Amino acid sequence: MFFPQFRARRIRGNEIFRRMVSETTLSVSDLVYPMFSAFGSGIKKEISSMPGIYQQSIEHIVAEAREAYNLGIPAVLLFGIPETKDAVGSDAYSETGIIQETIRAIKREVPGLAVITDVCMCEYTDHGHCGIIKDGDVDNDSTLELLAREALSHVRAGADMVAPSDMMDGRVAAIREVLDEHGFDKIPIMSYAVKYASGYYGPFREAAESTPQFGDRRSYQMDPANRLEALREAASDIEEGADIIMVKPGLPYLDILRDLRNECNLPLAVYNVSGEYSMVKAAAAQGWIDEERVVLETMIGFKRAGADIIITYHAKDVARWLKRG
Image (spheres, rainbow, N blue to C red):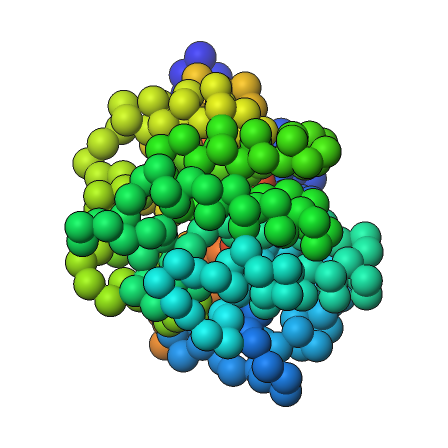
């Protein structure tokens, strides 16, 4: 059917009809809000490269978690900034570590909010890498044991879901085995299955104080040039027991998200990462873009590409905009 018999503007010209035929919907239930919990008290330090996002001590984390819950956001994703760091990331799996104590506080004060925890070593090691260093690189297999210990300690503290982000081979299976052995077979794993070695993580490194002290993470994170490898990584994590598969970053990898949606019937998450957030904030501060319009368009783009869950620092704003209608 072609013009003049077909006129697309007959529908587009009416706001009600546009809503009725919208092919993609965005809900506050799709959102996860990342938070950075810092050791100490009275801490609320704005991250210079991420306006509106803070390193916060537990009492402030709890207050913001309550705010997110009251906005209808169903879950938060926690990252920790410990008091001290060492070569083996001891605070990551300490029963009294910063994340473990944060989980307990949130679950005590905001029990209806789901708590997801990032499972990785980079925030806790003094070298900033995601595992145990041997011969100048992260040793895969010795790191698996510590990641499993970390995940178990999070779940014992009350985490509702764990999210391994380290990109070690076999980590989903190692975590699944340990959780099941200790009676936590009902706890889901959201795997950072497809995590690229990206330049978009820069602001996060400031937020989590996790910049590598030497080298980079290309020996364990994915090459941005690779597409088929993403399918292999996702298939491997699914085979090992992942319940949700994540793509990170988001905007530069929408093609990967769509590939996975076409191939995979598990729920898919996408991480709208720090660099993506910071670029929008910077452009909006200059008056170059309409922040609300651009952010909501980005969220719809993630959903249209196949995401079921969007992890985003914009979550609170998106929730407010959606509520306002």
